[in-house]
Length: 283
Image (cartoon, rainbow, N blue to C red):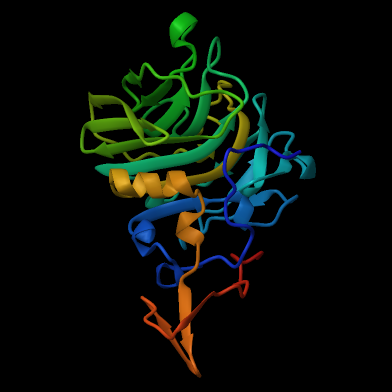
């Protein structure tokens, strides 16, 4: 299956494994987790974390090789809204306070409507919740609005991500200040009842963490980022323009036998490094 998009992104190439290799090193600052199916191995049950924190995820539910589908971003995950999700074990790097950012590029094939659709969550079975971004189960005009849950209260925007198209959804938290974003537009601001609280729950993509009552996302996931800081509007737009922005490699400028990184004054020639770096270990 090929999922259409209005503009074509750079094709599959060697990916940066560290801040020093990245064309956008700022997007590595404070990075706690980066799960990008396009940068990994398709058809397997592990979704690798590219942040360097080894927060690798396990694909659960009825996910199989057919759940990896092609898109303009490369491979993406197809979650069925019934039992498919990615489980990432609890780790101190994912228990984030007081500032955080969640950014997910996704393609919902159904709105929240009568069912919550969890995009990404770090939550225990009962309480507390560190962070959770989802589509609300509100009905009528507010069916499927982008929302956030901090364990004590829900915070709902009035904007509904368009189904059957790619969306860049984000939540930023600075202490108790929450901002929700859809495709670079601020759709909601609020003062949280409490700052983020660490917990022992799993991080889940497509399900509300360790909470066991359904609420699965239905659609496609291209990339998910979690940061231990609040991204700026310009940084959020960098990820909106290219969900794999942090993984794009630097350009190297070549003159005779010398290679220099940076601005290319004439008569330097420019090429993009395309050697495929070692992926996260299969061990």
